[in-house]
Picture 1 (tube, helix red, strand yellow):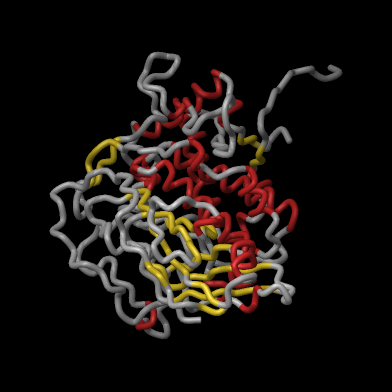
Picture 2 (picture 1 turned 90 degrees about the vertical axis):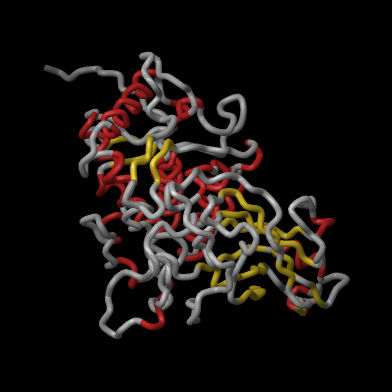
Length: 265
Length: 182
């Protein structure tokens, strides 16, 4: 598994990992071209509107439930852009089912004003710059989180994972996903601007992780054949390309420790 | 099953666009609720071997505010302050992630999926209407012990809306139904 990159839980990151995570976003935020935060976040909602939510097609069997595959492709491309800035960094997942004392609502790495290095925390927010939108959106992102008891619970996740039919599972997980977007509120609360909030990516890593857990139990056999060949625009991928996260070079773990031992020579 | 309306759902006339868009805010209650006519629930009667019952809602508009849709059975007076308890008829919630209003020029958010040409293979419009499913098995089973019919009330509680969103007519759908499994 040496070549497989491990996505870790936000709650288990050590100080170095948090620093790398913040530096990767800081680096992306400093770039205005198509390697940078502004352009890549803009692929989701305003201005590009590539994202897939709900069931966007009344003409195709199973109504084109591309929510999970499309966001897996999106996160893959996002994580590659992170690693262009900070080699070795991975996208951590936010487990919103965790309660005190491990976590209480938004994880502190996303709410601290500054990082350990004294620099502004790049995970706190982002300044959206879309003067061409109608109306223009030129301001910092904001959040208005609810009380922690309004977040999904492990029971909700277990109930979702217990569904064996693809469409049933996908819709149930998307509903949980919608709940968390609404819970964070502010820019995360609406599709148009959600991806500009730095916590968007770790929320979606959690969703992607739950899909992967479901796939480990149920495989991919009951995903409608119509879906497998669908293109996940604007990415150079089809649904079949994202069904196995190992093919994309990553895996999910709560934490990872690497202790070098060495070989025989 | 048709999911796209031939005409846009009823809505308030759009307010003039702001000079710059502000941040979405949590609004809470105040939006109009919807209550159905009484619906037979004999499928959940004690002599039926029902294992699961869903409330399926089709044709949901999702172009504006995000909200929690709280489902109350046999409680047409329910509002956002009504406790989410079985005693008040609460059966579950769905959550809708809305687009946050139209951030484009005129026509950008008009959906016309049924009017497409045969060889129009472009991606569907992102505002093609949505569907939601709320599992209501226990609530319906309990009510069916003493009731032959129930009303379904949907109370939208807005989690995020900006100045482009209609915060009064929030929940808009084409159809809903109970679907049970034995």
